Image (cartoon, rainbow, N blue to C red; front, side):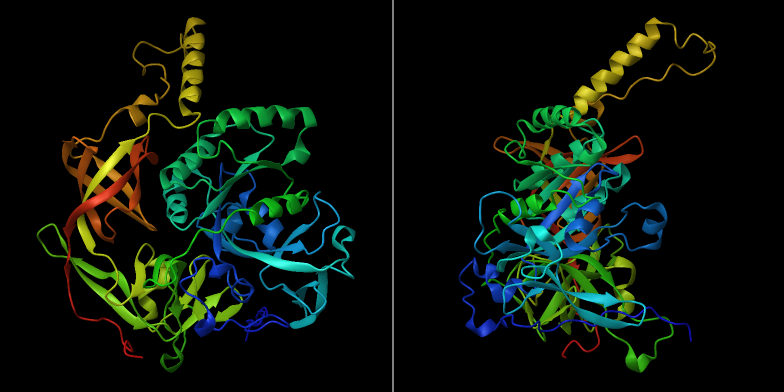
Length: 541
């Protein structure tokens, strides 16, 4: 047999840390998710990494969590984020700081913990002999880093990072990740002009999702002079003026050198955790689904499919009976769908290296089920909704949407005007004189009006992001409402589980790519026929 790389064993209980008891928690208290017995094992806030391609989003995550989010072969070959990346980190604070200056906050991996002396301890894993070496002191007495050697420390935040791809053709993937974000780090490279196209588009997505907990990260400051970094700071402030990030702090860092990461950790720690509804029925957006079975696995030893995502409300318990909607679906031959929700039980709960007995809203978790693993392979259930049986919203095949088209993308019109001026200048110099009369006309710059200035039209193909689901649709009918203005009836190409009043993102095809043009709100629609047949073995547990 081929030698396998040893894997670090899962962690169930860490030394000297409190054990959470669900019966003793006050579920009516929305701030209970910040209790030490909760955050020592599970992240309770989701922070998205947004910004232009190659600005260092994945490097920022690695500098804070020690985790490389690029795990797929195609990502490693290209050194580029293609799918959503996930990593957890714990943020610690010095108990009795000597001053208000930097150095009193530190971020480490999610498997770090506090010992009886108030020191931050991390496991050092030796991949050569497959055994765990002795614990390493990261902060406190005996730490190798002199800036945090000494004093007692306390755990104040456990954060899940959602690393979004920055390429323009992967904008829909970024919008799926924004459905679970509580805040965001807008990463801007100091050695490039601000704003870049996807910097503006990602910030527009935050506007659409009403996410205003944003920290602007000025990365790669080690590659520029101080005067250039200050000049870009002026452009950043000018760019975010009038947006949800207008009052956001700007933190200069070098993620590659781990410079100023402690200051960034401090700003993340000060980001408020949203109030959670723990008393309601559990509900989770599914961001990924996969099978953990190896090729050639015996049938007797097959493990059920796994789904990953983030709870938006309620508490999910091991052994709980759950439902996944829309589940399996097929065309009914009349332009609609027949859906069969999947019903099963929670076979296991995981948060990175931790096994959980229950999970609370906030943070990314993995849910082991008894679903046939072939149904969860290759993200087949991504975009669906998981929750208690009988508590999930309706499944729609047509939506009535109140939409708003953005007047402009921040920084986009200015870029188009610059291109237009360059085009006119080149034309005045007879730059295109070499073109023959029979050849094509000189290239003309694209205009923002073609993307943002026009409302939706009947028969137009659009792209909707509903929660974590990306679904194509066709505008069937338009009407003008005296109160809500523009309303569109959209026939979906696939069924979607959605709630009336839920906010969605609207994208339009522009030059062979889908570009974000506005936002909308679901007013209602036509629901799908739902079959009562359960396609799941072991649903009764």
